[in-house]
Image 1 (cartoon, rainbow, N blue to C red):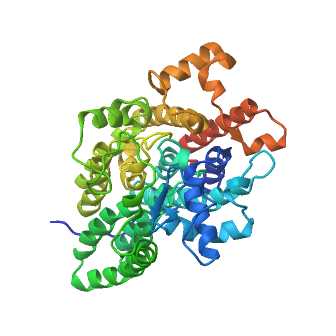
Image 2: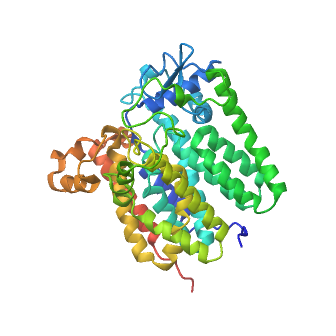
Image 3: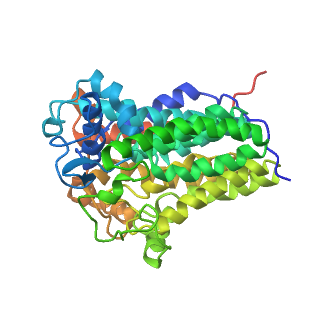
Length: 446
C-alpha cells in the first residue's frame, strides 16, 4: 500500500560550515560569456523595458528564436523573470558589453540566481537526508552539491539548478502536506523549464494519495506558473501552447526536429554517451549508482510512496537524456538535462551512507574529483578525449603542458592576487576540506 509518510527534517552537523565551503568550491568560477547568458539575461532586460524582444542584445546565434520578424529567447521565461532583481541590482549592461576582466556583474547575476538556487537545494537535500538517517545529512549535502552535475552549473547562466530547486521544493511541500504551495513551486519549475511538466504530473500523483481535495489545491497552485508561461507564448509566439524551441534560429546537427521537446526514442549512441561517454554517469558520477540503490532501501524501510516518486522522476529525466540527440547539451560539463531529477535521486544517498559508509564515501570522492575538474574546464571544451579521467592523468603527468591545464576557467579569487592555477588549487583544497569535514565522526558527549 502506498501511503505518504511524515516529512523527515533535521539539521545536519556543521551545516553552516559545509554550506560555506560548498559555496566557495562551486560559486567562484567565472565562466566565459555564453549564449545561455544572452538568452536569459537579455530577456530580463527586455521585460523591464516592456517587451519580450531580445535583439540586438542577444544577437542571432544559438539559444534564440525568431517569430514574426523579431528575435526572442528560445527559453522558458522563468529564469529571466527570477533574474530581474539581480540584473537590475548590478545594472547589468547589454550583452555586447559583458567583459569579465574588468567587470564581474554577469558573474554576480549568475550567483544571485542559479548559485542561490544551488545552495538552497543543497540545504534542503541535507536537511531531509539527516531526517531520514541521522548522521548522514552532512555527507549527503556535500556529495550532492559537489559530486553531481549540479556543481558546474551553479555559477553559470543556465536554468537547470533553479528548476531542480523548485521541482524538488514542490515534492517536499507536498510531502509536508502543503499541496497549494507545492503546486506554486511546481508551476515555477515549469516556468523555468518545460521539461518540469513531468515533475508537475508525478508530484500530482503523489498528492492524490492523500485525496482529491489536496489534489484540487495542488492544481490551483500550479495554475499561475502555467498561466504566465502561456501568456508569454501568446504574446511572443501567437498562441499560448506554443514553445520557443519550435522557432529556433539555429539548429544542431545531432538534434532531430519534432518529438517531445526534441526527445525521441532512446538511441544506442545517446545511451552510450549518457552512461559511459567521456562525461557519462558511470564515468563522472558513479556515486549516483549508490543513490539509485538507496532508493530501493528507502522503499524497504517503508517510505514506498516517496521512494517510488523519486525513482520515477529520475527515470523520466533519464529517458529524456537518452532520447535526446545531444545529451551533453553542446559545450557543457555533462548531462545537464538530468539536473532537475538529481535532488530526488540524492535522497537515496542517506540509507546507503548509513549502511555502507566507506564504499559510498569512496564513490563520492571519485565523483567529487571528476566534477571538480569538469567544473574548472568545461566552459572552454566541447569534449574530453578518452574521458575526463584520462585528461586528469595527463594533467598529473605533464602539468602546465596538459590540455586540461590550458582549459582552466578564471576564478573570482583571481581578483585577490592568485594566478588562475593558484586560485583553482585553493578551490580544490576547499573541496577536499568540505568532504573531510562532512565525513568527520560525531562528537560523543561524556
